[in-house]
Image 1: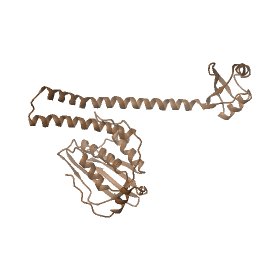
Image 2 (image 1 turned 135 degrees about the vertical axis):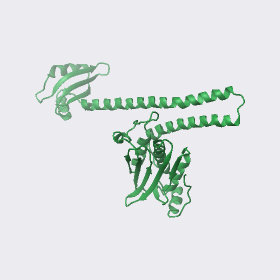
Image 3 (image 1 turned 45 degrees about the vertical axis):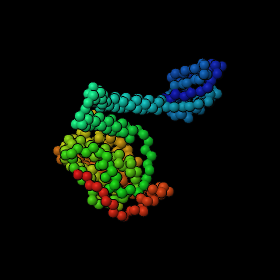
Image 4 (image 1 turned 90 degrees about the vertical axis):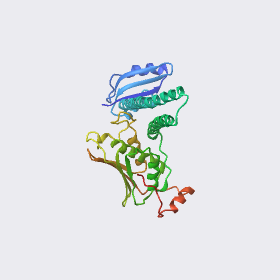
Length: 325
């Protein structure tokens, strides 16, 4: 039989009469295990077994008691477990973020100290030292953005966008290694979406592809249209994803990297699902990985925004885009 806890507001005179009337087991199958009284607040709490909440309310009404609340103990346990899991996740994320930020911060600190001690720096030295600083700052920014993209609420700003422009803008902002080639789709596709959020998702996918190839290889980006919507694929020719890792890659905080928050792919999934779409992955060890995004066409832009009207008006026109090499 389920266990419940209920609460009442009771003065001391009524409390005495209740204690005299409440037996260990009532005729209707209700068993009172414990009673706790907060004298200062005049609150009585009872822990009891009962077929359901309504039976407890009826049982106590016979003594002149009105239940302020009746809650299954199982629900209390569940909430406590959820809070514990949430705190554990926050602790793990904080520890991981602190660890990942320590290295680039050390680089910045050491580089600044060297530059302070060297009063006269050649142009070549300046280029080297400022390059170190920029890379460390970019790394910190990437870590922080990963966390913010995952934890902050997603409020979509929907417009009719040329997907090719979103892809091109994404690539321009990525620090692409010299030995990586990114191929752009040749066909033009329009989609109602939040271009900024889709750019965040594509950035994570492309960066994952580059890292999977150890900063050397080719990333292929493809665009398709079907009856339901738009399909975007990001594929690499890297090491692939092991079968035992595949089911976990979209889980928050899961990562196989020594550095990283483990929130990149989880953020991607969150963004795509907010658009009403899906993201899936296929991979062959040693051959590469392909992430497939599918976003439906049933999302309508806010055409009250003048910017949206200009986007819609240009639909169907060819747009010249840079091709990443």
